[in-house]
Image (cartoon, rainbow over all chains, first blue to last red; front, side, top):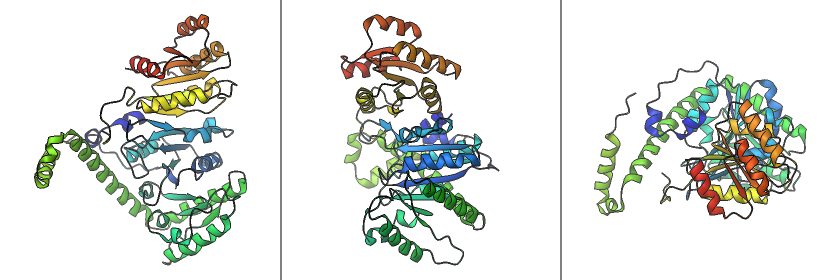
Length: 288
Length: 139
């Protein structure tokens, strides 16, 4: 089922029957951050803690090769090493043609997790840089995992993913610089969120070796989930999800059409290339 | 579909689990094969060391793989392979193909084939042959 969804083309996705709105959607928790920040390990510990709250599934994305399409999906190695992990449902995904931190057809796979009856889905993005924040709209609660000493205050002030997180975690907090890093982010996050009633992202210190820090992170996620219920954030997120889905579908289709052009095509004037491509895009019926 | 892609790689679109069942802790071979399969276009999931046959079969089902490659250097290949095949059947996933790599004496290879193993790769086999044979078996 998930394999079929992952492999579906834009046209196949468009032809799927409209999905009824699920009355009981899974809570969606996203874990994002730079490569090697400790996302998988943190997620594994969190998942073991949170599975008591209902059936929990994990979708973990690792990068696909732009040269061969191949991928090493190694996130679950970290998770499988934990005691009790064999009861978790973990699905590893290659990012495939997507370069925003997610994977091809991920919105559809998240919906499928709702349909499978999961109470909570944890999504691990690929290792990201400053602007791959598409996970923002796909999850309800976004956790950004940072490393101590990964930059000065100016890095924390930069636009992009630093503005998107609901919870900041300075991971590997037993390394030096963690406290200072957390204090810097705290100051900047407080300046970014000053509307009354808005969520002020907490900045937490965590280490896989400190169970109390994992528990504190899990509790922060619960607090954010409770806050969501009192705000109109979910409506905004649902609209953003719908926009992302349509845009990705079109992008996939455009990439498919452009891949069909031969080298000679690009000798034509740009306006002609554009018109011909638009014509090819319009030439297909997507009516179910 | 990938922009930098010229020809379709031999294992494009395939999902393959590389598993290390049992107690041997040598996974250089498993990692080299994983990387080779990646370079041939496969999505490769690696289990890490010292997994039980049940864990490996369960991961194969959860991950929806086309094939499981078992890397075994401990000498216990007959028992471990039989266990993995049994667990896959019990999980109604007998369609997932199993191949084995490692130090497999010639006299055991027939036995493994009789268990239903799709291919056996010994340490002296060129990696290009591994890719070619897998491509054929998974076609």
